[in-house]
Length: 213
Image (cartoon, rainbow, N blue to C red; front, side):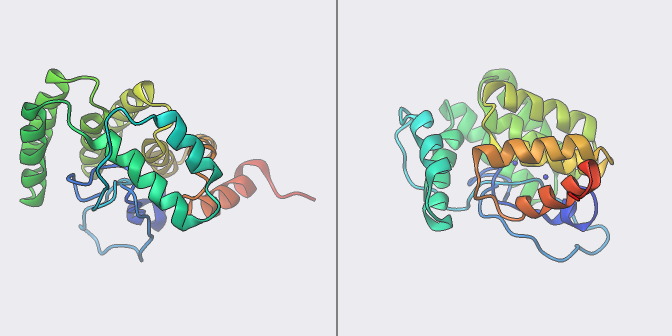
C-alpha cells in the first residue's frame, strides 16, 4: 500500500501492497528522489512472508505489534499481519491477482487495473485488491480514485497501517498537511515502528501546530 516533496514519491515502505503484489508495502525505506518519469509507489507489503493460518487472530497480532520491544520483533509481527491480509479468498481471485502483477511488471497499468476491478467485483471484501488498485491509481496521479480505494480499505480494516501511510502521502502531495499529519499519527498509533513516518510527523507538527516555546 504512499507525501509531498521527494519523500512522497520515494516512500516505498513495503507496507501496503502485496508480497505477491505490485512489488510494493512492508519493509520500508526512503531513497533519493527518483528521476523524472520514474513511477512512484505507495507503501507496500514485504516480498517474503511467513505462512500463517487465515484464522490467526489479528487483534492479538496488532497488540503484539504495538508492544514489540524492537524493530526486528516488530517486523516479524508485521509480516504475519501482511500474510493474513494477502491471502486470497478464492482460486479465481488468486489467478486474477497474479495476472494483475504480471501486467504491472509489463508496465500495462490499465490492464492491471481492469483485472483488479474484476477481483473487487468478485470479492469486494478482499482488501488487498482495493489496496493495490489504490497504488496503481496513485502511480497515475489519479488521487481521487486512489483516495476512494484507500477509504474502502480502511472501512474494512481501520488498522491498515499501509493504507494510512498512503493516505498521509497523498494528503501531503496535495498540500493538506493537517490531514497528512492526522493520517501519519493514526498509522503510528497502530504500528509505532514504521520507518521515516516519525520524522514526517515531527516536521508536519511544527508546520501545522507550531513549535513549542
